[in-house]
Length: 119
Image (cartoon, rainbow, N blue to C red; front, side, top):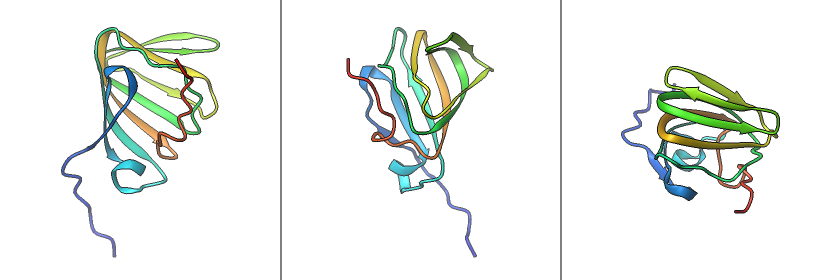
């Protein structure tokens, strides 16, 4: 019988541009393949290269505003709102004033499956 497992602290994942990823559950933290749950803290003016990940990403913005750009739209996702991006969709994340958010990826995030564009 499985018992509850305490996650005492997240695992930091390095990313470009000054954003921090603190993974509580996932491939990097403990080898979980099915899902990852992480807290992201992005500073004002942060942006990352476009990516075409192999996972669906469910994002809940806790503070600030996250700008989510796809090939068809640009969304401003504010504190108290959420956004879903689908596997295979080209997407780019940025902030103007900074943001703190929770990202849930299914299957779990991996630096090898995010497929960030160069530059």
